Amino acid sequence: MAEDLKDRQSLVNLRDQMLKVLFAKDDDKLISGSKLMTQERRVNIQANNGIIHGISDVIYPFTSKGDMMNAKTKRFLAIDDDDPELIKKVKQGTLKGINLSRHVRAWLGVPYAQPPVGELRFAPPEDLEERDDDDTLETRSQPNSCMQNLDTSGMTGAEMWNTKEELSEDCLYLNIYAPRNATELLPVLVWIHGGGHSTGAASLDQYDGQQLVSSGNIVFVAIQYRLGPLGFMYLGERSGIPGNMGLLDQVKALDWISQNIQTFNGNPDEVTLMGESSGAHSVALHMISPKSEGLFQKAILHSSGLNPSWGYQAPKNALENARNLSSLLDCPEDPEDILTCLREKDAEEITSKAKEVLPKEAFLTFPFVVTLDGNFITEEPQEALANEVISSKIPVLLGSNANEGFFDLLTNKPDTFPDKELDLRDMEMSEEDIEDQIKSLFPQYPAFIQRLIRHEYKDVISSSMAGKFHALDQIVGDSAYVCDTEHFAQAISENGNDVYRFHFNHQSSQDPWPEYTGSKHGDEIEFIFGRPLENPNKYEVEELSLASDMMTYWLNFVKTGNPNPSSLLASWPKYQEPCWPYLNLTAEFNGGKVFERTLNGRCEFWNEILPSLLKELETDDKEEENQEAEAREFF
Image (cartoon, rainbow, N blue to C red; front, side, top):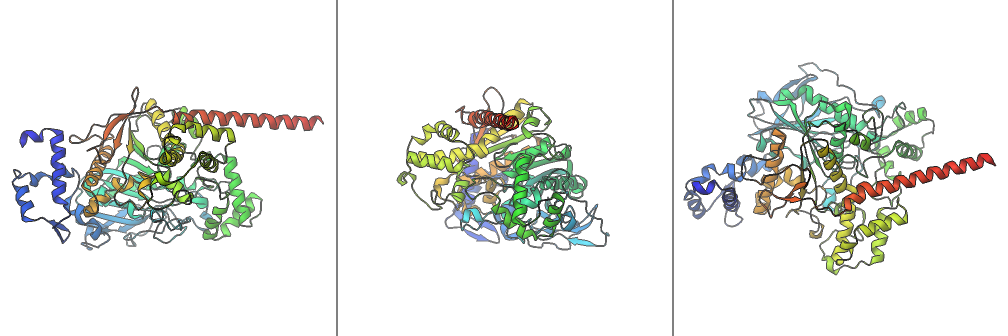
């Protein structure tokens, strides 16, 4: 046995055998949150040279078995309510938290800025006023969520991302999770939620930090920020609605963390920013913004880079959308009067009317997103990337999922992509249908570019009927998420940053979406946050391994800037020339498997060819406008 344990594959096999025993689904009982094994299984394990006593490091190198078994049942239970360590004094006053388990305590709904209401609506966030030490703030329940439009489609897979908390402008809060037994300063992981800069909250069950904290012995913080028009409306730098208020909220939260996290045993000099989708976009923007300099040291990005098609708009487009919303709210056109009018409107009305700013046929487009504001963003993101303003000292872990596009296709095109189980081979989709779908996905492009898109994916489209559906998934996924992530990864690698890229390719056995949708946008979050380890009976054994492996990689990165552990898992190489290797994360491979990047030309099309074509078209349009103006002057 001792010789076998020296071999990595033997360790992996042993771990999986123990998983099958520990989480066997037949003839075992659950008592007080612990598995009771049959006598036969006990004998088999004990006969294994007593290895079960040390097997926790093989099965889950970072996981406390007690938390793994019943963290769900203990969530939000007040344990040792008189624990003096629940009382924390920060610069703005005194907080009282809650013990969530024997291993984790939390402070939920911690304010980090003044409520952005009244005269502070649309303004950059203001510092909190200090409270008397005797005035203890109860931070023991989830905070209000920021104003947003919830998904009411009836799709379980979509509505699971809705917040359950009350919506309010008073929403600038953060949640802190920390180990109860910490005796030294620990690395800090800060989570920025996604949602198109329009939806989301720190309070979602998917973002519960207990497993990460108990598994990795880190401090976890989830932050909230203003969304939609209240967070990203733009009327000009000196208008009173300067844009990017949600990003400035994030900076204020990071500044609060820098000043106070040491009180919770967090190390302010070891902060990792992590985000998914628009949260990842935010992380990338913090990497180029002078406002965020020095507030974090590492970065993790899921499914976005610096310039996603849906996440950034030119100031002229941002101004147009702001004026359209003002008109819908019956506000005057004068900028000063607009501000007064909008501050008098109900926040719910402003948020609701935002849905009408863009035409209904607009696909994966949000009216109020990031723009060049001259404050948080001082130059165009792509120019900043080219000018190498990102510090090469920041290590980056990033990646995307195998079927990024299906989430948006099902939520926006339910007639074509139904929310039910089906065999794509039995579906019908003609070549004309493909053309119509591409037109509806990209109505902003001229016909010849729509034809170029179709040509780029002709091999997948012509392969089979299922291929046609998957081609549309790949078209949406590549254009919106994958290729932007790829472009950012390559650019910062060439900049000298240590970059580790992943490709997530597993559909959870608990996924509420149809099987044909595969590994969708956001599906990896379930595994990064350790949900399978909280409810092992619901998941396959291989999924428990996948969750453990992914948490191991991510937590190692948070601690060291390198995801590779000392043993067990596949070595994850840096994403760099000449092969550009990445880690494929799937339940089929223990610890993932390394592949080299396949140059199929698709990302070259989205990242280089298409932008060049659009720039030429814009230049031609400007020349035509100038010629028309000259002609009018002549006549």
